[in-house]
Image (cartoon, rainbow, N blue to C red; front, side, top):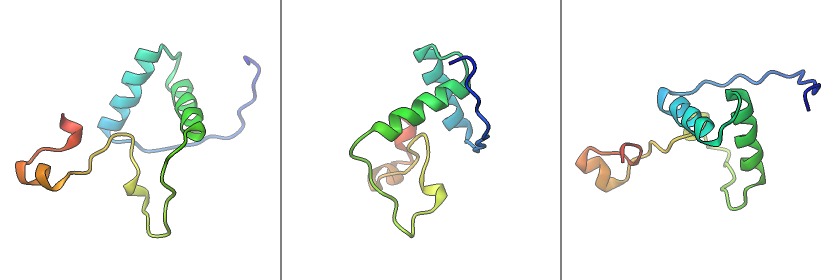
Amino acid sequence: MGNLNRGERLQIMLTDDELKAVDEWRFNARMPSRAAAVRELLKRGLAAEGFETATRTTKSKDFGVVDTRKTAAEKSNGRSRASK
């Protein structure tokens, strides 16, 4: 696999929390680079079953590495799922 030609570049923007999650996964999985970790995560995500298909009204901001959405109870307490 060392002579694999990857001619396309994919650039994404991540929040600090998302980058931290990727880097922590990379370290725990002993991946040699961020790029290798992201490719592995993409491979696993593409092979996964049971994910929801985006609708026409779904925005890019609705997708993230870490879940930052708050439940009604969390909003009233001022806590998010990501902070647990």
